[in-house]
Image 1 (cartoon, rainbow, N blue to C red):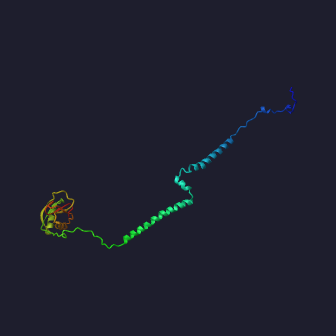
Image 2: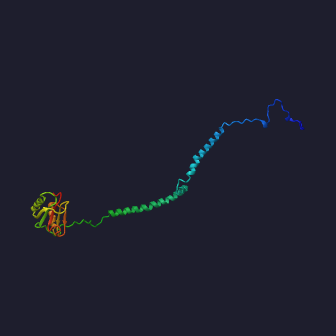
Image 3: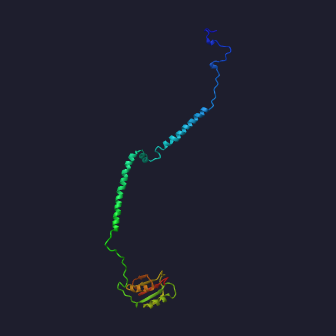
Length: 225
């Protein structure tokens, strides 16, 4: 027996099924995991939003633009217009005026007539204009370098019929000739020109005195007609 008086806590019903709090068996409710799923979804959405909106702004905040473009973009439109206007005016006005003036000056210089007569190309005087006379009595030498049998005799008859004196007709013993040539010594230019006109030979070559022969020498080359 206790020495303390009885109170309301000592009156316990015989059929009361309640247990003490310190001895009660508490059933822990099992979590279904729905809260964790919702929390994970919210976090994923937050991370995605940050990656989609914030990260691109941080990456493009100046790394992709040069320093000059970033500084220009920071300027106000009015400042950009003020800086561009003097440059355009300075670039256009000085270059346009000299170009127009230069074009006018060149046009005037081209149109302006000159009183000085145009110089005509000087032609080399012929042997007859230089005072030489054709002398058909001077002998001719005719050589066949065309490889055509009888060509020298045929040409000899042609020049003889024109009044020329033929001293020799023979085959050419020199090097190969690409075309027909008439060699002459100083003072024989008139005779060489006359024979060339008669035979249609235009390649006339003056040599030193006696370098080929002492007379006008006709060498008939390939293709002679």
